Length: 267
Length: 358
Image 1 (cartoon, one colour):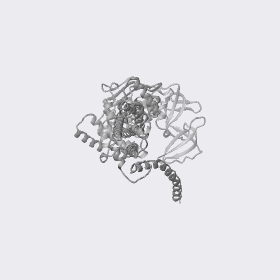
Image 2: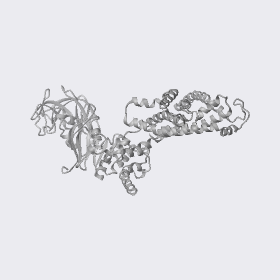
Image 3: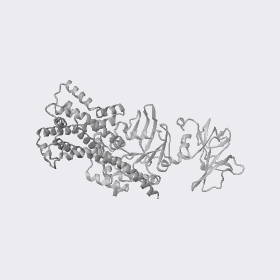
Image 4: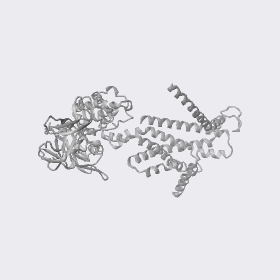
C-alpha cells in the first residue's frame, strides 16, 4: 500500500517536472534543429525549404575564406588549449599547495568572470603599449588568459576534494617531490585536466569578442568571418558552417562531462 | 625486557603552531622491537609528535636520534620510517599491487624482486587474491591491510600508525587489534601507534606514553599505568576511577568530611594536599567493625561479566563507582558500608599533572 501510494505520488510529480523540462528543451533545441535542418536545404534562400541537399556543405568546403578562417580558429584553439591546460593546472596546483589566500584564489578566477569586452580592450591596450604587431599569436595569448582561469577552476575543484595525505604517503614511501607530482598528483588530476582542456577548447573555438580586439587584419578567425558574412545576409552556407561548429562543440562538451563524472566516481 | 636497546631517542622536543605549543619539551625513548603507544585525548600533541618522527613537521627545538642518525635533518622520503595514515591514503588510481609496490619502485629494485616481495607481503596480510582490485572496491578492513602492507614492505626500522583502527567498526577493530599485534611479532618492526582509545592502547602496546597538553605524563607498561599511575591525570585517564581529596598522611589521606582514608604511597612519601584513587573493583562491602564509608545506591548496571553500582556519599561531590564480578543482589536505594584494601588505594600528589615527577 505504502509503496504504491508513493509511486503514484512520484509519478504525478514527475509528470509536472517532465512537462517543464519538455518545454525548456523545446525552446533550447528547436532553433538548433531548424539550423541543422536548413543546412540541408537545396534553396539559395535560408528561409524557404526547397528539398534536401548537401550542396551547401560542398560550397562551404570550397570557400577558401571560410576554410582559412577555420584553420586559423583551429590553430588558435589547439595552441591556446595546450598552453592554458599546462598553465592552468600549474596555477591550480600552486594555489592549492602553497597558498591559503582566498584573495589570490579569487584573482585566479577573475579572467573567467570578467566581461570579454574588458579583457579584449585591456589586452589590446597592453599589446599596443608593447608595440606588438597583432596576429594569430596575440589571439592565442588572449585566449590563454581566460581559458587558463577555467582550467585552473576545474582542476582546483578536484584538488580540494583529494586527500592531502596522498602526497605525504608518496613522500613517506621514498618518492621525491617531482616523482610525487608526476606519479600521484598528476594522475589523480587527469580527469579534471582533460575536462578543463575540453572546456578551454570549446570556449576558444567560438570566441568572438576578444579575438575581434586582439586579432590582426590578415588572420581572421572563423567567428569573425561568420560575422562579416552575416552582414551580407544569411546564406544556407552559414547554416552548414554553424552546424559543423556545433557538432565540434557538442562533442567536446559531452566529452568534458564524461570526464568530470569519471573524476567524481573515482574520488 | 629491560635489556633492550633504544631505537629512538627523543630529547627536549618542542613544536609550536603559532601561539599553540603542540609538543612541549618531550623526552622519550622507544626501544627496538617494541609495540609502543602514544595515548592521549585529541589535541594533546600525539599526532604532531608522530608527524615529527615521519618528517612532515620540523620541530622548533630538540633532537630525535635513530641510533646515531639525526633524524630531523633527514627529509621524510629518506628516513627508514614508514607511516600508516589515518585515512590510509591509498592511491586511488592504482590497484592494490601497484600501491604496495610503489615504495619498492622508488628504491629502484628489480622487477622480479618487487614482485616476490609484494606477493609475500600480500600473503602476510591475507590479501593475496586482491592484488588487482582498486582500493575503492575493498572494505574498510581490507583497505587497512593494504595500507599496512604498503607501509611494512619497505622493512622500515620504525612503523608509525596514526589512529590505525579509528575508521573501522567495532567488530573489525577487535580483529585488527589482534592482527596488528601478531604482525608486529611476525615482521619484527618497532611499531609506534597513536591513539586516543585507552582500551586499544592497553590491549596492543608493550609500553604506553600518556600524553596531555604536549607533555609526557607517564611512560609505563599497561598494567603499571593502571595500578601505579603517577598522578591524578593518568589515574583518571586510564580506566574507571574514584578520587577523594584530602591531606596526605603516612597511612593515606585525611578527607575533610570522611576522615582518614587509608591508602598506599608506593614509597613516594607524598605530603600536603593529595588525592586518593580507589578503583571500582577494589571497593567492597565492609564486614562488621571494619573501617568504612557509608554510601547510597543510585543505580545498578549489569554488563554480563560484571555489575557496576553507582553510589553517592554524603558530602562527596562526585558519584562513586563500585564494581562486582557477575550479577549483584544490591538494590537501588539501599545503603551500603564500603571499605577497601589500603594496599590498593593509591595516594597521588595534587600538583598540576605536568609538574609531578616521581
